[in-house]
Amino acid sequence: MRKAWYHWLTEGGYKTPVHFCNDCEEKFKSNKIKINKSKIVINRSRFKLSGEKKAELMKLSEKWNTKVGPIYKMFTCDSCRRDMYRAYHVWLAEKGNLIEIHLCKKCGEKIGFSKIIKGIIYDLDGTLISTLKLHRAAWLAAGRKFIVPITEEMLKNQSGISDEEAALMMLPEEKKYLLKKFVEVKQKYVRENIKRASLFSGTTETINDLIQKGYKVWICTSAHKFFVTKVLSLLGPLKKVIESNIIWREMYKYAKPSPDALNLTINKMGLTGSQVCLYRRRLQ
Image (tube, rainbow, N blue to C red; front, side, top):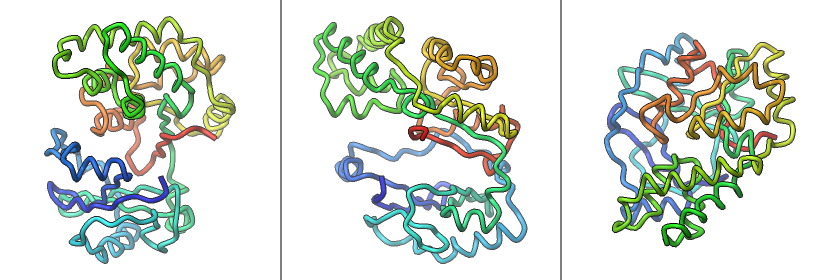
């Protein structure tokens, strides 16, 4: 999205904007989306930016008016206020609080962030591979088997979350007990039709180029191991290079939007949060 509803999160040791699209803003206002206290304690010692860079960025955050109500506006750089579609997401730790700052490419490079990126983390579904139609067909198949109506909104909302969370969202209250079987039918359909998945154009070339340039390239996904291992065959010669650099659902405790998976990936890479770049959109 290019525009979003901006809310300020200033409790629990955070000072950061939270962004909602129009649909999620309506759900939030009607209490369909609830903000609960996080079960995850983030290790603030990982955010080690210091010196002149930190001081310069802290000056930006000190100008924020975090007491204003939610507003709908374009994404803008926190430094130059230029409209932007992509940004450097910079996390700082100050007096035990986490502060998130967003910078455009020009401001990020000016402060030197382009020189310290050492690792790239890719999501899998919708980023490196195209599986939208496959997952839609799989959920529809599970719905037919258990006589559960699957709506377009459900199919839209299942993207980016675990199968278990998606199934809980789709199953009516009186059929929640079918959760395990419902997910099994969905996953069986995916396994049997995995050939329908395909790499986005340029995926292998891009990953190979990044590796040749010395970047650490990892994949972090909410997909299960059976799916990831099947999809690896699509990478051809790159499979041997990247197969040990993948974090899948069974390897971490809490699913998205928890940072559990990303924290694990960054730790495995041997880097800090400020040294990696995360891609969760289609590779182009």
